[in-house]
Length: 146
Image (cartoon, rainbow, N blue to C red; front, side, top):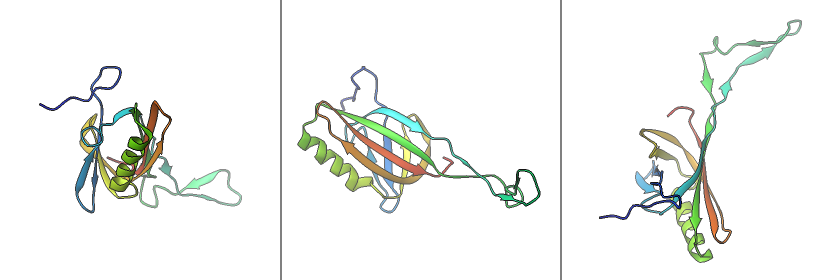
């Protein structure tokens, strides 16, 4: 029987699985790295507009539909994982392991909250150790659609 990872509030931990597309190796934030997600945010995708200014005309002329339709820019997914009661050495070793595994590599990201879909992008890993409450923040610029 495997131990269930519980966050300090007593609830089951939402997690993410990062699969490196080049090697097809998967990394699970819950089972492999023993992290719990403290914060999660998906930005809205911005509409890409093709607009031109025509002298003698009020406003801009929107050519988006004439040039193929509606398109969107990438969006960011930011996940903050809390590491509680880690020593400095253990925390930095974990951060280094995560960086080596996924930082800058094209990944498919599956969230436990939405397992039927995946996001595709290149994660960036930031780590900040602050004694009792240290964070690992993974920010990924992903395609606008799942």
